[in-house]
Length: 244
Image (cartoon, rainbow, N blue to C red; front, side, top):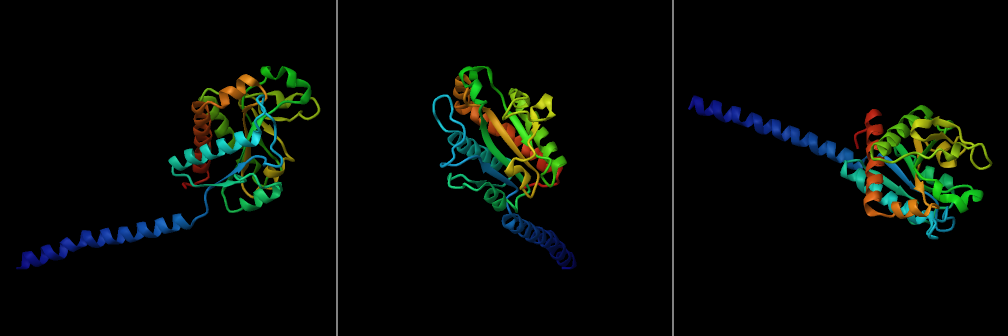
């Protein structure tokens, strides 16, 4: 009987520990569920101001919308929560985007690229991604570090940067923050300088180039780009100690 009593007493201990652990887990899950999404994904441009026109006549906004949705899916697959901003195409005030994103820990604006008007007739020679950050953002060093993570992931996926935004002409002349990775300073870009958190803008490719546009419309390429950007953002969040 003494042995049975001891056995009964000790056998309840794992159960109590399990219940305690389960309670902590439920509390943690509840806190995680109530926490704001970690990443704000800004869908560049809108229906009223659709951005660049691709070689086919498709709007940049349509490219940005698809790519932003794929990025959200890629982040979700990694357990990273995110919020789409401007997905419906009805946001015209740029500062409204960063205001809506004020609770997120990282801001990324999704875009596709063009060239200056004098080059449109020869647009086929322009291709590649570029990433922009602002020194007027409250966190310029962290923004640049995140841009490097994204650019490295794009490079590892086989993408190459375009350096045409550094050309000393009207509309370009952007200083390079990292030439090897295609990262530029664009200090007065509104969504970057008014963001409350580290922020970057990704140009996924040059859609005025017919060959580049066709490539960027391939589902495998769209998914590859989303996967690469998500990998870079995840590494950036981990460096900041953010796990969701």
